[in-house]
Length: 166
Image (cartoon, rainbow, N blue to C red; front, side, top):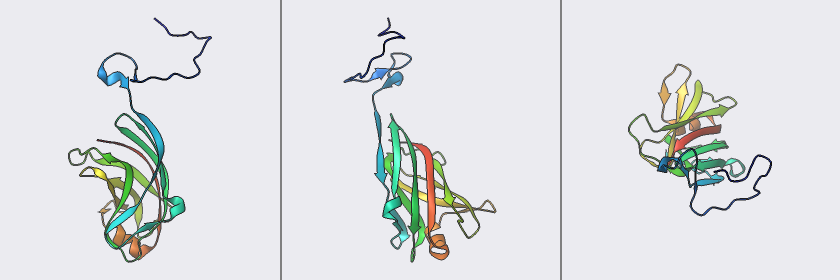
């Protein structure tokens, strides 16, 4: 039986337990929806990277255990840093098996320098710290992005993607 009709619409609907879409099994229940912004921070193996405070906000929409993110981590400065570079995301990543934890791709804004083609971010152990990895123009991967940034200068990272949360 239908609730309402095509000519009459409900303005607001408040539910206390969720709604089932396309069936009544547990997988069809929508009971978790959230949107907001996350202030991302950076860390490295050695040194203290910073993200410009005006450009460290990532927008997110979380539906169930799937998180969609979009934003710019602008002017990531890693002067004096070395090793890996990590950035935080809004929710803990689900800990999956190897190669399944690559969450999304990030693209450098402007010239990435040092022969970088693009970046991606991975999380191989759960948690909300994601490692930034550079893919070089020759196809090789460089996980020591903090070292790369220290030698090349600041990078702006545009981030867009999806990952699963625990």
